[in-house]
Image 1 (tube, rainbow, N blue to C red):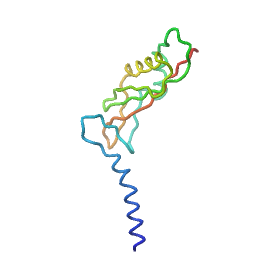
Image 2: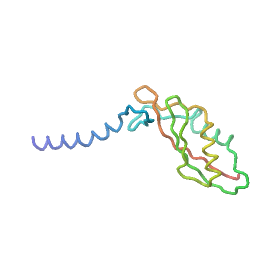
Image 3: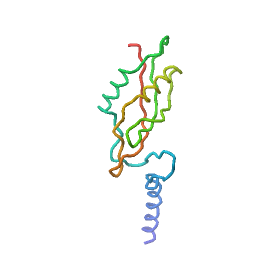
Image 4: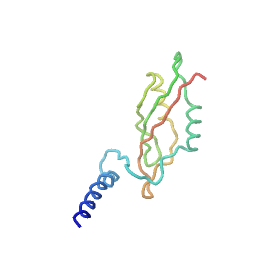
Length: 132
């Protein structure tokens, strides 16, 4: 019986942090959901649509012969708008600025959902700069 009680206590202690991390706070700050969600945020047309959007609108900085990838994070709001773009891994100041411009002109995404309602989520978007 004592062994069962100890195992039950360990199980409860191990589960509580995971369960509480998924609860949303009621603050004025943007809340990003943690834990399991029902549907991930998706760009119109999926990954293929996102790559096409970036390729069509990317303006390679003039005078630069730099190639590589800029990683940008942003928040996809409940209404699907991409906001608060931040460079996580930059390439050069001009490419970083262009990557943030691309985020700012994105159309609305299909928002992520949890418990049948749209939620804010953070996404990381790679933006490739290539001379080809």
